[in-house]
Amino acid sequence: MQSKILSRRDLEFLLYEWLDAQALTRRQRFAEHSRETFDAAIDTCEQIATELFAPHNKKSDQNEPHFDGERVHIIPEVKAALDAFSAAGLLAAGHDFDQGGMQLPCLVEKAAFAYFKAANVGTAAYPFLTIGNANTLLKCGTPEQIGMFVKPMLEGRYFGTMCLSEPQAGSSLSDITTRAEPQADGSYRLTGNKMWISAGEHELSENIIHLVLAKVPGPDGKPIPGVKGISLFIVPKFLVQPDGSLGERNDVVLAGLNHKMGYRGTTNCLLNFGEGKFRPGGSAGAVGYLVGEVHRGLANMFHMMNEARIGVGLGAVALGYTGYLHALDYARNRPQGRHPLNKDPSQPQLKIIEHTDVKRMLLAQKTYVEGGMALCLYCARLVDEQRTAADDAARQRAGLLLDILTPIAKSWPSQWCLEANNLAIQVHGGYGYTREYNVEQFYRDNRLNPIHEGTHGIHGLDLLGRKVVMQDGAALKALGEQIQATIQCSQAAPELAGYGQALRTALQRVAKATGALHAAGDTNKTLANASLYLEAFGHVVLAWIWLEQALAAHKGSLPDADFYRGKMQANAYFYRWELPKVHQQLDLLESIDTTALDMQDAWF
Image (cartoon, rainbow, N blue to C red; front, side, top):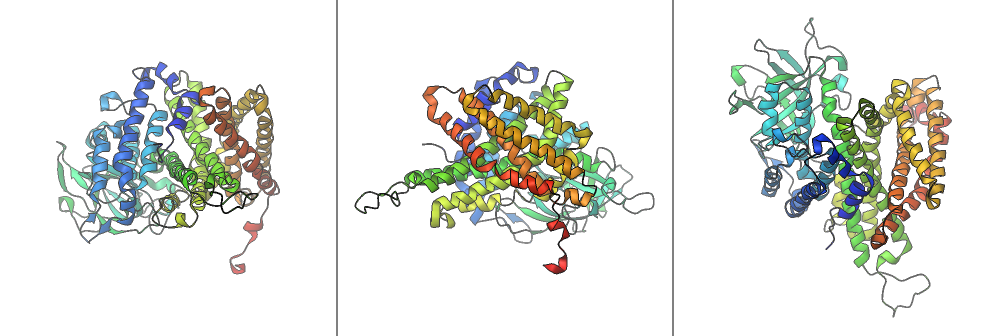
């Protein structure tokens, strides 16, 4: 029976026929690997996700964690799944052999981990936040911090979080007020509140390692205004003794759980630091340890945030993808209605996949989720290039491409794979709107992804205000060169040449709109419609990604002809139905439209 979690055939196409994962085995870091070891890792993830994550997805949604005033209660299936994840060594899948890891390429790791996000995104959040936390400390922490905190996380004994937002600040991190006072022993004492902390409290692991943004007072005793005053701290739930054993409880206290529309299996917390319920060492304040340099906290935390942003995009894809597969299976099995020219009630009903409008909805979902998966895995391949390419120039180029594609990889799947979930409900009709079918939960779970790790608005500002102009447009130029190379290849394939020309026209229009916006002479006008710019830019990027897939499918062999024809048809759909949308958007952008900017509060 074909899996309704993800399509293994599509993953194999992306990994081996397009992104050439096997070529990575010629690099020293991955020399002990082969396609067989890559496939074995994916097999393990698919099996654990199918047998231990997916079965309690609906149960954890219907029986979300609850707080009795003393402890958080979570259904036992969550811990059983996480224990299996840890026992398989997956927390260290991308890490060095000498750290107990598998030393997998990021490309293979992300492809394999997509199974968990699709099977049960609520349970999957716990290990993936931990992996991001550990990766940040490996980049920024001291050897002592790595030994004390990272090693137990990679073993699955400790889990991790990141604590950025505060109730009064939200995404405006310059306005955080959590305070960190230096102590004589080199530690700090933190006081303040953090909001929206996923996995912030539970009993699924021995300890929880919080990475916390806070401000160290300046010489005058006052916090330094703005983001320049922010530092990063390790704040464990339980203090850790020099021998690695757990010590007394730190003063990190759950004030309450947030009750979410989706993602209900993940505790989402308001945490109080230093409220006084616990007094470690007999003193007030939560004990914290500085990571990296003082006042460099935001730069250090961005190691985790950028990784999390690509992870959010992949999570959005996974939820859209499993919704699409559920809708496809339903459409193939649900009889209803007849063709417009055959209304004879004595004739058997058609399966609804035979109705053109249902095919349209399924085809739209296919382009969104397969395109989104391809984009996220392309970004993972860039991570491998940035880390292991043979020369500095190649590594730097990969870094530039990652910089400009990260806001797209986070935001485009969050918008359009959510739309895939919307269409999956529509394919199911009234059944899709009931809790008895899975697609309504997929939509609710996915609705978080356009919000967390930066809203569309924030990523639009980042893309238009920073990424396309940084280093005199170096990242935009690098991306343009990559797209032009794909267009050039398409001209040798008559079936695809027209798509290449359409992509060239759209790319030229993006460059023109970018120039016009930055020539406006008024930053407010330049950035007023940044979210629209993000959407248009993203659609052009996805048109490129689809043409790349079509070029690979064009070389496909006859025994799997239906799969390749499906790729070609999806590419045609994207170019005929989706890419034309950007031209009206670019018209608005080039006109420096100020309709929204000029609107006044009193006029609403």
